[in-house]
Structure formats: C-alpha cells, structure tokens
Image (cartoon, rainbow, N blue to C red; front, side, top):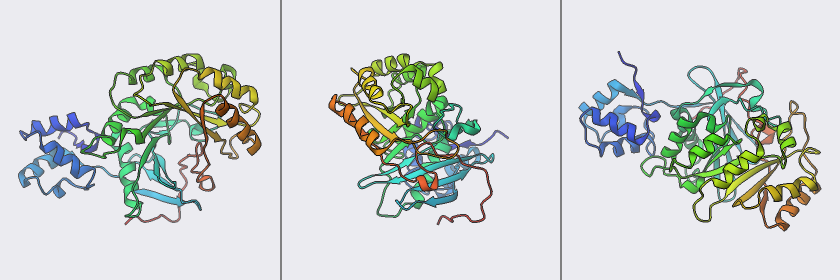
Length: 353
C-alpha cells in the first residue's frame, strides 16, 4: 500500500491538491486547515463537519502527526524548556520565553546543527538530520497545550536547534502555515527566522514572497573574529553576507535584526563597536546584544556589565538601535546557545494534560 501522507507536511496548495484528488470542493481545504491548527485535532475522524465517507477516504491516505514533550523544565523566571523525542529517537528542544507583554516560542528546525559556532553547545554533537515541516509545526502545537488558558503565544522565533536555511524547503513551508490566516494565524511581524548567514539562501528568500522578520547571527565586526567564532564565515565571508543583507528587499519601516553575542576579549572592545557601526552603515537594522551564556564546554566568558553597557552606548551614540537582551532560562540550559537535547534517560517525565 502507498505510504500515508502526514497532513501537517503539506502546504496549503498541496493540501488543496490532495483534497481535489478525492473529488472534493476547494473550500474543504480551509475546513481541514482549521481542524489541524486552530482546533488541533489528533485524528481525521474528529473533523465532524466533513462527511463520514470523506473522512474515511482521507483517513485511508493520510494521518495527523503530533509531538508530546518528553520532559519540561521550568526556570525561576518562568522560562520553560521542552524536550521532544522524534519517531526515530532523535531529540530536539523548544523554549517558551515569557516577557511583560509577549510569550515567545523558540523553535528548532534541525536535530543538532552542522554550523559549529564556537560559542554554542548545539553543534558540538553535529547534525543528526533536518526536521520535517510537521515536526517544526508540532513544536508550536505542543507548546499551546502547556500554556495557561488566559495566555497565548505571541511570537515565534526559528532560532532553536539547527540552521533554518539549511532546511530551506521545510522551514519556508512551515512559516507559510504559521502566517496563514486559516492555520496558525501569526502576524508576519511576529515570526522571525534567524540564520548564521547562508548567502545563496538569503538571496533566494527575496523571491519567495513569504513575509517574516529576518535575523542574522553576526557576532563579529571583522573577518578575522568571525572566522574564529563561526566557521561558516570561511564559506560566506562577512563582506558577502553584508552585501546580501543590503540587497535584501525589506517592507517599509522593516529592519534586519543583527544578533551579536558578546564574548569577553574576543569581540567586545571599543574598536569592535566602532567597526560594527561602520559595517552596518546603510542597512536598516537593529542590534540585539546578547552577553555570552557560559557553559563548561564553551571556551569563552561573558564580558562585564560595564563592558556591555559601553559597547551598547557606542552603537546608540552612532544612531543605531541596540538592545541588550537579558538571558532567560540559563539555569535550565534554555538560554541562547545552550540547547543540546542530551540523550540521557530521565527518571521522571512531566505529564501533559
């Protein structure tokens, strides 16, 4: 028998074609989307506004996948780290980050990572595989199950485990469903894709027409420092990356976010700050300054508070928007650069109801 199709792996057009192949009307696509995402059903049989015969036909050729957290850890600041085990045994992590007016979900796009950034734990074990579209989306749907009823997830950031643009097709398909009004209904301003700087894929994004916010993990003001911190810079040098950012089409008033992990005595000097001002000139941008989240396996340290504030002041005095991002969830290894999804067995598991 032909293998069944995971409905959450299908883009809207693909779902429409599947339903059309059964001789059904196009408007049924919207009905199925609403069952899959806003209503979050777990089986085709729960789609009660479809006829029994249609449900039976659909059930014969498709299924609805899901994810349940294997473990949930919560930090004192309310940050929650969700550990998932995929069908093949690989593990990924997502993070729920509360703020005053926002609840952000940090989503993974790969199990592991091949980028090897020296300040990040995720890549130490290498890349296991890329996630399917449904595995990306199911992290969001699983997170909905654990947030309290009066709170809603407001923002999605694709900056968990993996490089989103190294899983280009599945990531873009997932974003299209995140922002689809009949699916997850997130505003394009509240979905952010973060990349280490895969230049051909950034150029390719320009022609996709899928709206979201672009963030670039920069972390250096010159080629030598970026080579030290980020091996990808040897393939796509800083000069080429910034050129791609300059030609990237932005909507009115939109900006590219540049993430800059501050590492003591590596990229945190006054000279580095002045270089950063110079290289970003002409790019509509804002800078997120992220003090390094330390870990025993990372051979670097975070700068002092005085150094961080001085670095920020230089950027702001030059007219740039620079925000120091407070570390959240570091006590449970949920902060930026700390996701590992270790494979150890757990004695206890948090049950989801």
